[in-house]
Image (cartoon, rainbow, N blue to C red; front, side, top):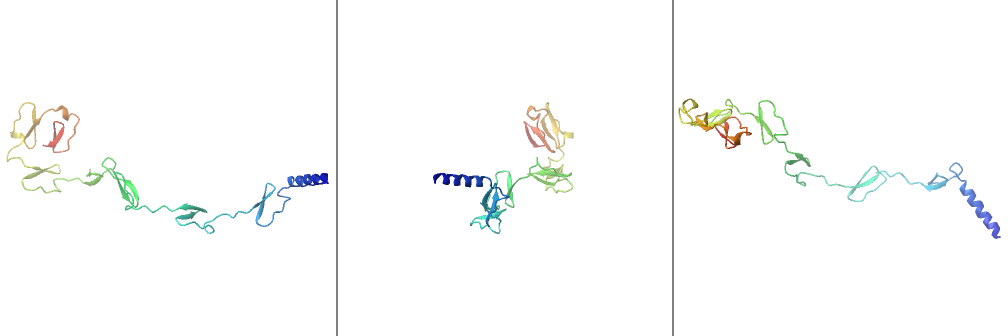
Length: 185
């Protein structure tokens, strides 16, 4: 009897080894792959998948909710400002180009002031769009004599002619370099 049982087991094994999907008929809810019946797993969709609280469904997967960032909930690092929950770099005069006739001050383009557009208070005069204190009456470079090594800059002010500290300093209109510093002149 033992020999019959062994033969039966060998026969079953041989039959199973020869099964293919073309010869195997799987029961409902199963499909055939590589000669084996495997359970069907339905494709997960957001309509069939229930996500736990704090998660949302996207493409059949539960993903954690991220809170909506607002300017009241985030702090931007220096040099940035918040706009619609995002940190945006602040404009600087190095990063923006002003249109012709405008100048940049603190990252903003403003119309360049001219003597035609500003009114100086009493005792001041306008030069290159800036108000300067008027010199005492009648004093101009035409009637001022500066000592040796100095030159006259309007309105009648003597400044050192050459200053090594001013070699690389560029002053704006109406200013001169004295000891490496731009001063009104």
